[in-house]
Length: 296
Image 1 (cartoon, rainbow, N blue to C red):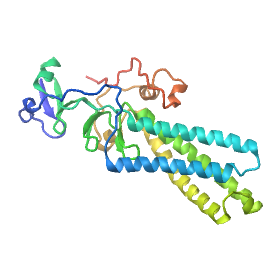
Image 2 (image 1 turned 60 degrees about the horizontal axis):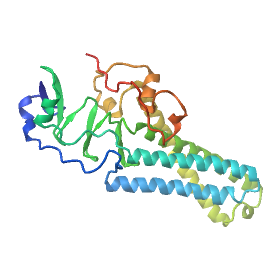
Image 3 (image 1 turned 180 degrees about the vertical axis):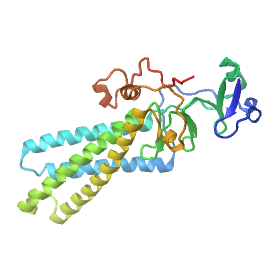
Image 4 (image 1 turned 120 degrees about the horizontal axis):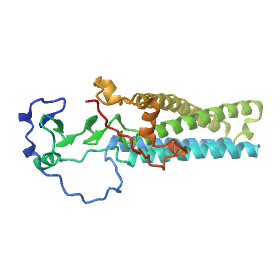
């Protein structure tokens, strides 16, 4: 058995597993909430929620409630609020779900001996968190943990995107893109209606305030539509190709078995395909999928 630093040292003599103190005893259950105490990430997460609430305010109180067509207001209000709720729920799950953190400080001599490794078998140790590093795991300097199948650290969800929460991150980008598109369509229709009618009848706010609120919503919707749509497409492409963002950036050699694109989607969103794929409240059931099946 050979224990080495991944990407740092390639000699067993530098590792010294006996220098790793045993991990501290767990004082919390597996069901406890995961939350990263990072100032920048917390601010970005709060801003995300405030921007969604702003869009809710403008859509409901500036455009829908003053509208004369009750059916138009009810249908668009239900669709927009439903998508916004799913977006915020997806954001919460992506932020507060353990992305796949490797137990900290488990690179002890006792733990390595308990693995019963075969002669010549290589395992990796992270020198930063003193953990045995599974294949395709990378260390995050913000989370201060090694994350399984880490794609990237996203400050907007104040968390890493890894094997356990990638579904929720993808849903978050999808629902934000949908409500942004919906808001842009409603803003366009509202401007057209107000130009044809009296601006004073278009909203309970003054015409200048209405225009400012709508322009800011239009700018916000366009910006987030482009950003989240690109991010959503990038994530789907990475999932289908079974290659994380870090692996693409580092151009790491693919040593894992190839699967079909549809099977790769099931690995992230769950087996079998169902409407639960679209729900941030449904935890993915990977079934018998082997996430780390490597070519020997």
